[in-house]
Length: 249
Image (cartoon, rainbow, N blue to C red):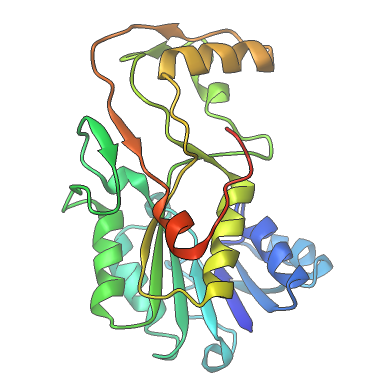
């Protein structure tokens, strides 16, 4: 397949390299021409896109079989509109994978599956709705907090205050996210919505104290409460597609 990855950064870059190993032709977007040499060195065909100055896709979009949208709303002034303008540059038959977030769910107690209550005004959920209303073959992956490749939340939480230490941790490893995206492509699983989250949910206070010790960092200051928060259920993709999570958090 000819695959375009929008957002060839922390997740998109290793994803693109894995897609190349699978035999696909990969185009990868970057916001700066300075990264072109790095992408070319990995046989990724680079192009500029930021949705602001560089709004138009310069690659032959009519030849793209699959579009992977992988950039956060923090990079956009109007995320839903940007998603709409982006996908309209690709053929109607182009398959789409959108990396959404479990932050779209309301802050309720208990287990949260794909039918859970969402924040209707959340910019990422509104972007999901753009995809659904487009009638294109699009699958939405709601990702939990991301770890891996020198990225771990404890590096930001070290020495800081953490409230509600009994709340559940919802994380997923970078390698499992990449594997989930490839699984969707291989299984031809379109017009689906899946949570992608490791199936164990330790208590936030204990987890980050242990993580600080493991990384040699100052532990956070934890305040405990009765709130257990939400635990993201990432099992539907396992049931539907036979996906296997392999990387503990």
